[in-house]
Image 1 (cartoon, rainbow, N blue to C red):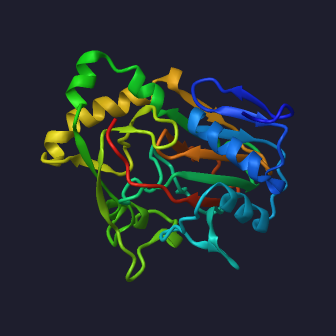
Image 2 (image 1 turned 45 degrees about the vertical axis):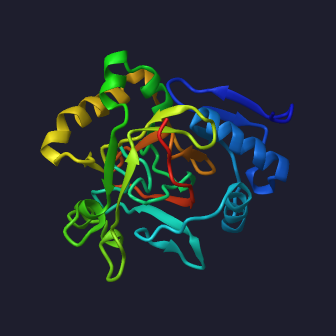
Amino acid sequence: MLHDRVRVRKADGCGAHVEGIDLGRLTEREADDVREALFEHGVLFFRDQSLTPEQHVAMAEAIGRIDINRFFPALRGYPQIAKVEKTPEQRSNIGGGWHTDHSYDAEPAMGSILVARETPPIGGDTLFADMYAAYEALDDDARAEIAGLRAVHGSGHVFGAAGTATRGDQTALTARPGVETPESVHPVVIRHPGSGKPALYVNPGFTLRFEGRSREESLPLLQRLFAHAIQPERVCRFAWRPGSVAFWDNRATWHFALNDYHGHYRLMHRITLAGVALEAA
């Protein structure tokens, strides 16, 4: 359980707000507590954290093993930290659609720790959706329809040579020679490896089709699941300011970075934590 001084307040729709903890000086016990809270709530929100890049890396290493993102540009001197940046001149942003990080990997990412460095005066919020609740809210017929299904997740349509990332002005995300854009297959309903709870594990950004079915055959059911997952009662909206931190579990949530601050600068630092192969619930 968390220390007495640490307060966890459930957020509306998804996740929890955490107060009374300094992420830059995380003890081993506190790291265990944060990990446990993450697995329970799916995403944790922290305010007024003064994390240096070194402390950001140390915090991540206290929680788990760092997975260096092969598509994002890295912060100079810190290959573990990905820059999530939009300049005043750019129109496209990073993460501007519902997705979960690294679902295209054979061992999908456990978590992502995003630190706000510079934020626009208004806008740039991130939406989060609860995949525990999405599965829980399915009726018996829907659960029977997806029981035992597996889905193919891919990255080439986004980060490949002709992917969507190459069509905007986020040129730092364009494909680089030798960078793999893999596909992987995962259960549609997973047993979360940390909490043991069932969660819906498909997402609009990277799920291509069901195993053994074509894209066209898969889309009607996928689109129904996507629409179900983002019903308002399962979604929260987090407003950033410098020093804010969101730590989300990629097996239990989706997220969507809103692109509503054209003409302003936004810089975030992200570290991704490695996960394990996923098993069916």
